[in-house]
Image (cartoon, rainbow, N blue to C red; front, side, top):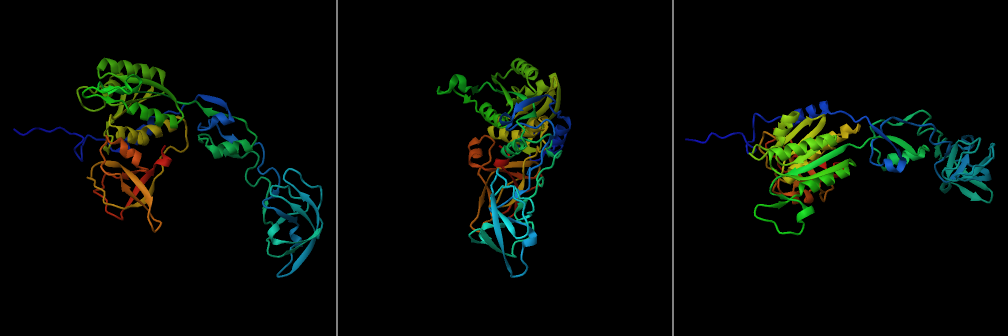
Length: 424
């Protein structure tokens, strides 16, 4: 009698699998933004999210100033055609040390970059375009009226919303806030994230580093990967270690984590094996939003809610942990923090090689983007794409995203990639 085979991760198309797009939509619709805020000193706000619109109480630039080193003149003194004109230099305007001179026709002031424009001037002729003779300069008509001048308020006016709520404060934003004279900002409270690994085969580095492994044992790496991924997002961490593969231990860990955190992440224990208790526990204690997805790697990804706490049960394979984190956990945490931009950047390059794929699931393959001798960017895979090959993530600098309907890629075909510099 033939074996009646059940659906498995080997099947290219499995009817019970939820499309990734639908899973992402469900996830986005169910995420709540954290409303608690912190008032922080500006430098402490780096990598935090603004909790309110940031408005300016000043104009930037605060005054009309020179954009170049040169000579401030009135545009009425600009000669026409190929003619030249000689002007008398009355003073020098330095940045932070304006002159009291009020220019009249035929007069000019030497001015440095950032120097306040003298009364009566509206144009700066750069120093490289004048002929200096004692206290006089000669100019021609090649400089346009109003050139090389930064007008007061041309960047920011009083009352402008400079940065909207939900902005992630990066170095540029930090500097911009400082330029407005603001030294404290309200930011969204950091999410508290609890995480643990499941598996009787796992040995924690905290107790087994440097010790030989027994038969069937492996070092727990996923928890350290999750630590690094979460640290990059600047969240508050609760590491619950390695949890035994029993229903009782899993249930106790889930309850503790959900009571202490805003979001819980586990790795392992979400498949259909007899020792896989995570998805069953989520369903028993709360709500399981989805479980099996039409993606590779990462098919057994459990998402749900326990005691009002968001929950992600990631697969046990190391690469699947990283891929599902990037595609689901990271955008969820950004949404919880109220970030305006939560999606990962995508851009299109040509494939340099043939890429194997069977239609049915969206695939996230590890890739290497490089620039060819002709200056064109192309991508190749890192080789074998097994979900346990964590070393392939070290070789890669991007993820190649292949749609579910794709049946393979030929050299020269366009493919979409997610660069790691936009993800990590």
